Image: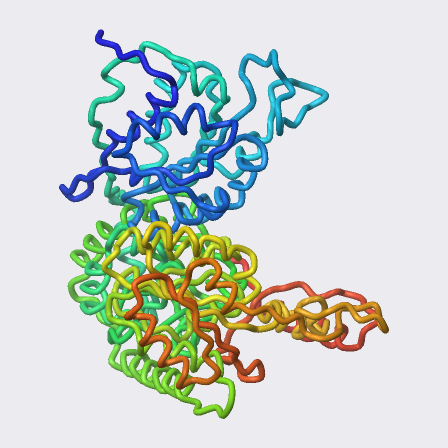
Length: 620
């Protein structure tokens, strides 16, 4: 067998360069390159290998966590058909990636993590940044990746990658098992040479399967849909990942079944589609939640039924409600006691459409769907154009951003009050035009995530909507965006603190304690002094961005138009009126309130909580 003598790191990069995926007859390289920061744990191994492979792009980031966020967003925007690898040194560089790994695994997104590790030969231990265990020498900080990775391995010898790398690719390209994959790479092993078989470096094409439902489950699902009077579809992220929007469109035009959306599934249908009734659950809208309340059959497509989607299991109130779940993952397909269709979303929808040629919702139900949709769209128009004097309401800011954006542009966010308002109000026009990380709702995702979405499709403008709390956590990737020429448009709402959690705190009777950006008072000893002022415009400019302060709605609209003409990242800072909020619409979210308290406001909140909890259900 022909061999090639290479270091383990060189062989690893050569392997990654030759991995391809195929779906529906289309082939392309799986890895777009590598993100990371070099340190003593990877510079002489992975770093040297990347240096001699300039055709495998390396993007240096400013924080290892944000590098993983960028990779996750890229995979999401690519419908899991492309990915990045991420590298770090040992120690804090590695553990910085754990949050990103968790985000990727929760959201079922393929990301390859290559943290440096301690010396496999051990004779120089403890090395710089090595944690020592009193009970074993076979443990290190990279063991922390085990519970948040779909696949984990530590490479003690250079030849071990020959068997490890195919397993890595199996997991990363699996529609049901993908998530973060971690290979811990001891720094000495990275630089060791081995005679690798040439076969390891051949072009390999991994087929992305479109799984078929079993015939028995399909027949049962068909019968459940055929006999239903008020069916409702919950479109999750699986619709987008499988590129099933056209199949969904055909199915619901044929049957008249209304489609509600999760955060991950928003945009499965265009907002003005006749069967699109908007978002569902705790951040849901009037139309979807009203229909969910009385639905006798819920057809979940690619959804995990997270607590926000189900309004903490209170949104489906029909005593006879049944469920049909379409999902590539058996784990999710069996949730809520559903008839499970373990299958690709597009395939399952096409087969259901073929099996239900005469199914149509009643004229009465169709009229109800239409009426609720008209009522909701009028509410969005109202919230977009409140004509609030002074500072704009957050809904007006969203309206201005939507009106400035084009039909293929992307709106991206992750945390705070923005995801809830955006899920209700943003009118998504095309698939993947709404990019929300809400599986982990991770503060700091927004800016690197926007870069990942932009890299996935540079022809689409990417708008980022975030608050000052999350901005202050990770603004430094603005510099990376300038460095790499990745233009994004950031709209930063200065809330003088954590507005979303402050609002939640007040709803729990706690008055927003610890959520404002205030000085500690010498008189009270509490954080109730003057507001801490941050010049976000100056900060953004110092990082290389074009930055603008918008004092009112007209200035915001002008700034958005200006940002579209700028050739680099722009940051638009605006303050909103905190007294004007987007209402809730027949929704609730279970956040436990203290059962006993000396505070009257907390006791009142607890009483309301106990009443609301009575609507929670088990769906078995």
